[in-house]
Image 1 (tube, rainbow, N blue to C red):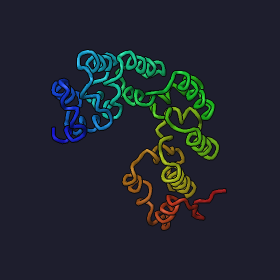
Image 2: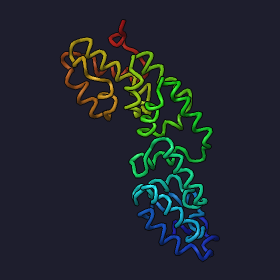
Image 3: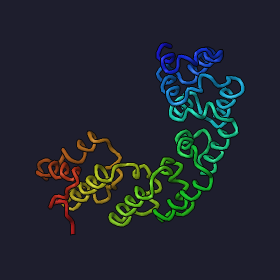
Image 4: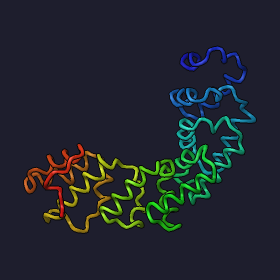
Length: 258
């Protein structure tokens, strides 16, 4: 309570403060989450509980968000509790229009992705994704439903990954659409160096030719090292060294394929 008071002590004279704190504490689940949200939007504690905050929470529940989803979403997007309920509903309807069903695990992420973005701009972003990755309507729908945060990426960010994954590696657009999380990975620190490792191992008969790239890039660093580097220390003495160099942006001679 003292930490909340320190944010704006003059506003604690408002009568709504105490009931708002009690209700929002139930919504956020902890003082830490509540404090994080209030730092972004102090109106959480001063907005009318019955006519503003509760109706907004009701809309979120109507669209299938459970307690944990609402807490996580509103910590990051605290405006959802203090804006008009019609706006919250419009955002949720927009998410459904992207092909993401209410109640799905990605709905919360999509709500954050389309916040403060007009329908026209969202439509333009979808068209840009289709053009950049050569996706059909169904494919872009699949990709967005799995990784809605793509809508927040810059054109340059997306273009560089398209050039690498499609032009350089020859991956099919449909393959990427079903694994869009690949697009969120670092190009220099993850996608490129790990693709070198996979290609090197296949070229030297050390890895099944049918082993796909996603099986390597989706792993965290510790597991990737355990599965793709450590088992080949004897057969490929310089693999770990070359991989480390590739992560620094270099292209070791053994990773240059013709």
